[in-house]
Length: 82
Image (tube, rainbow, N blue to C red; front, side, top):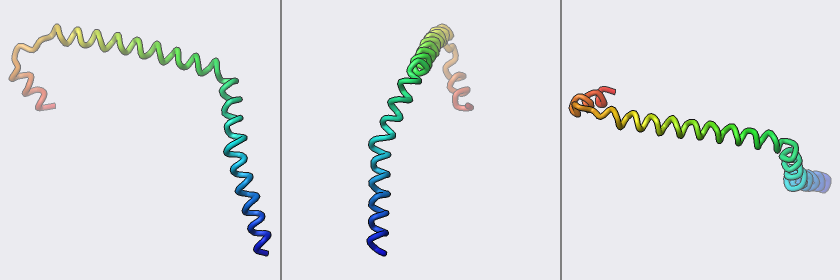
């Protein structure tokens, strides 16, 4: 009775390890091969979004530099209220 339990537990453990170390990595590589074009397209979209956000940030910084505050106390008071 006990030997059957340990043999089934051992085979279950070996089966789980085989799936984790053999089947799952192969599955990931095959999935990556079929999705490669989609991955590249997603990266290009994210690159474009990054470039546009960088440009927007630079424009915002330029605009903020042009709008120098004249009344520092008033600005500090407004900042404290927020």
